[in-house]
Amino acid sequence: MPHDGLVYCDCDHCVRLALRRLTAARDGEETLRQNQRDFIAAKVSFFEQLRCLYEPFFDGYDGRVVEMINHHADPHPKKKLREQAFSEIQDANSAEERIYIKKVKYKMKPDDIARFGKYGRMIGDLGVAASLQGFRITEMLKLAQSSTPVDVGTGEMVFVKSANSDVLRNQFQHLSTRSDGKFHFTYHSDDSVYRTRDGIAYNIDIASCDASHTNELFDALLLVVPDIWKDDLRILCDQCRLPIEITSRNGKQRVLLRPIGARLYSGSTLTTFINNIASMLIALAISEGEQTETGFVTSAARAGYLITLQRCDKPEDIQFLKRSPVFDASGELQPVINMGVFLRASGTCRGDLAGRGDVCERAREFQRGLIQSTFPRMDAPFLKNLLAATKTRDFPAVLGRLDSQSFRNRRVVLAQVERNLSYTLNIESSLTPVLKFSDRSLFVRYDLSEYELEEMLDLFSKAGFRDSVHCSAVEKILQKDYGLGLLIRC
Image 1: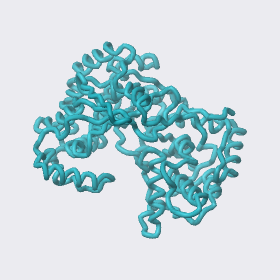
Image 2: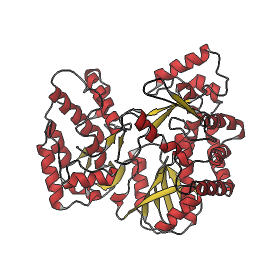
Image 3: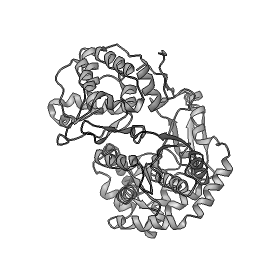
Image 4: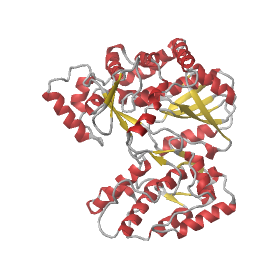
């Protein structure tokens, strides 16, 4: 879709602006940071509660060095890189060293789509060796968090580790419950939804989350692990105290910036865990304050964070992990990827199209793979029309079959689809029942009129190679899910 999103280039000017995500001060920065220090100091009992919940999950943990030796070759997308890094660590006889790196290379995130007026994103490249020091302990902590909801008396907090359909279905049902006298908080890193005791749900967005964590929050992380393993976690915190290096694109200039305290670098293995803790503190503060939108913002500031809220007046307004609840044909709520995710990715491919031969045929096959992998095991007239419009060779109905030797090229298609969507797909197995939806139910979230929906569905059914779709419905969807507009206004 021809939206007005921007992809920043990797030039010195864009790097200068993108770096502000890490270095720029928020309005009231000093007050917010002091608020966070005071709030954490007053919540020692909360961290002790977390430690009691998480401690049993460390029974099989043997320390960072042993864990690295035993698990560096576990199945993982970066398995080969981990094996290579481990070999280099062994050759240098440096496995027992506390920190393997002296600085962090900071660079632009490639192909990232930003809204107009927003800074580009950067990546803190700590390297694979640094991740080997912490991938096991952070995995233990994430497993502990996902396995143990935290009950604080007035409500509970639930960490969703991945976009598993059964887990999301359960959480959406909780978040859509109108009233049970307690709050419910669902979170993953800085993505969260809070349902009040009165049954009103709010999507929460944290402004400058990674740059808002104080030294005190990093220190508080140590309170939730057994004493014997605290230093393993402290090493990961110390990695976030290393200087960062930014290199000019001409290669002749570079600058080294040394933080005065710990700063969360995007490539740190701590990212999900520390953001989880931050989200929990925000929820805890909100639960103790006035249950209004203004009260939520004030309470979050008590924990040291600036937030924006989106009130969910209907279940479909809830957005979590780029998914929203949708009623299927039998009247049950089901988690479905937001339509904006699909529309933003449609008609584009990062890199060259997979395969050889006619580019039109390859583009149609790629688009078919995008449709089937974004909406697996789903049946709706809208999706049937989209698939019919690709008019290409037979494509396996279940993407789990992509491991077959005969579909080697289509594995490349799937990898490209994942890059386009900017996250890892959670492919459903062939045992997952096919869910049926009406076209109207799939688009309730976007408040489309009957005419807007019919117009969009008609345009999609006719669109083919080199066609783009402009209509008010598409603009509403992109605006709702990403804050994007169309290049040609409708």
